[in-house]
Length: 194
Length: 229
Length: 212
Image (tube, rainbow over all chains, first blue to last red; front, top):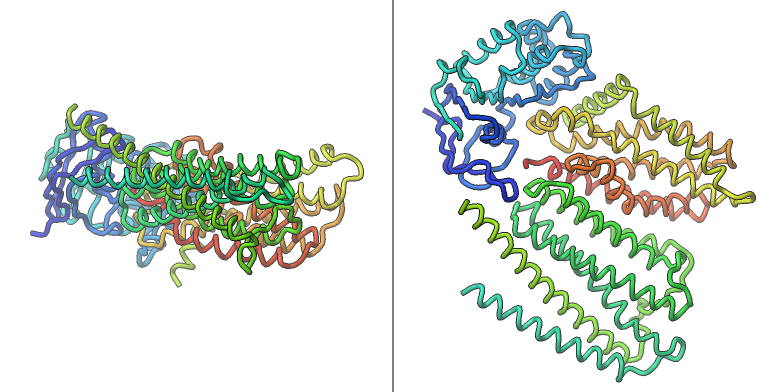
C-alpha cells in the first residue's frame, strides 16, 4: 500500500531549541494519524512539518505535493474582512478548483454557512469561522488533511460536521489534539509526544 | 586534520597580511612623494580608497554566498554571507571616517553633502546596517537565512545603481583619480596604491577566516550543549 | 493566462479588504496633506521652488511607507501566509497582487497630494507627474517585498523604514532631479531602477515567504 506520509528520524530545531527529535512515521493512504501530547510538546511543529509549512532540521520526510494537502491551524485561515463567498471563491481560484461556483456553494451548504455567505467573517462566532476554515480546507479535495486542534472552537453542530469529515476514509487524515477522546476510535496510527 | 590545514591557511594569510600592511605603511609614509596640491594629508588617499574598494569586495562576497543560500539552503553559506557583510560594514565605517578626515584636510569641512560619492557610500552603509536590524528581529532559521540573502542581493544591486546616481549629479569636488584612460597617478603612487589595496584585501581575508572560525566554534558548542541536555 | 488571473484576484482581494476596513487610505491621505501643511510652516520665506519640490518627495516617500507598513498585516495577523503558500499558484503572484493594490492606494493619495502641493506652494508640471508615476512603481515593487520581510520580524513598524529608506534614496535622487527639470536622464534612471529592482523583487519573493 502506498504510503502517503513517511518519516525517518524527523527532527526540528529553532535556533538552539530542539522541539522534535527522532520521529518515525508510516501513514498509509486513507490512514488516520492521531498526534497527542501536552501543550508545548511539539504537536503544532510536527503538523507544520507534515503540511510543508516548515522544513525538517534533520531526518527524512516524504509527503504528497503541497497542493494535494489541506491545512487547518489554530486560526481558521480566512480573511475576516471578506465574506465566506469571497473567501472561498478566492481560494478556489488559487487552488485551481474546477467548477468553482458549484463547489463553493456545495460546501457552504454542507457546513450550514449558505445563509450567511454575504456577511463579513469578522462578525461570525469563532465556531462559524472554524466551520468556514473546514470549508476552505476541503475546497480542493485534498488527498491529505492536516488539522491542528480542530475541535477547539466548534459548537455541537460543528462537532458533528467535523465528525463527518474525520470519518471519511478516502482521505488520509492527521489530527493533533490534547483531548483525544472524541477521535480515539478512528485512529489507525498513533503518536504520543512527550 | 582538516582543521589543522585550515589553521595553517589562516596563519599563512594573516602573516601575509601583516607583512603587506607593513610594506604598505612603509611605502605610504616614506616612499611616495608628497602631493603638490594637497600636501602630506593626501596620503590618507592610500587608506581611504583601498578601504572603500575592500568593503565593496566584502559586500560582493556576501552577496555571492547569499546566492548560494537561496540556491542550496546551506546554513553554512548564511554564516559566511553574514560574516562578510559584517566586515563590509566595519570597512565601510572606516571609509566614512577616512573620507571625512580627507575632506577636512583637503577642503576644510568634516562632511559635505555635495560630494555624492561620499553620500552614496553613506547610503550603502545605512543599507547594510539595516541588514543587521533585519537579522536581529527575526528568529534564527531558514526564514532568516533566506531573507538576509535576498536583502544582501538587493544591496549588491544597489551599488551600481548608486554609482549611476553619482554620474547623474553635477557637482564634483572629489578628485577623479581613475579615468577611462587609466589612473592619473605617477607610477610610484600607483604602485603604493596597489600594495595598500592588496594589504587591505589580505586583512579582510584574515579577519573573515578568524571571525568565521570563531562563529562556527560557537555554533558547534551550542549543538553539543543541546545534545547533552 | 492563469498567472494574470491570480494576480487580479489577489489585487482585487486587497482592494476589497481596504474598502471594508477603511484604515490605510484615509490615514495616507490625511498624512500627506498634513505633511505638506507642516512643510509650509517649516520653510522660510522666499524658499525656492526646488526646495519645496524636495519636500514633496519626502512627503510621498513617507506616505508610501505608511501604506506599505499596513500591506501584509491581514496575512500576518490571521496566519494567512500558510493558506496562500500551499496553493499551486506562483508565489510571486502574491507579491504582484499586493504591489498593485499598494500602488492604487499611493496613486489615490497622490491625486490629492499633487494638487494640494500646487495650491500650497507652486505649480506641478507634466515632468513631475511622470517622475512620480515612475517612482511609484519602484516604491511599490521594492516596498512590498520589504514589507513581507518586515512583517515576519518583531518590530515591523520600526524595521520597514530602516529597510526601505536606503533603497528609496536613488528614487528620490531621480525624482527630484526630474521634477526640478534637470534633464530627462533622471526619468530614464527611474525607469532603470524600476526595471532592475522589480525584476529582483519578483524573482526573490518566493524565498521571503518560504518555509521556516
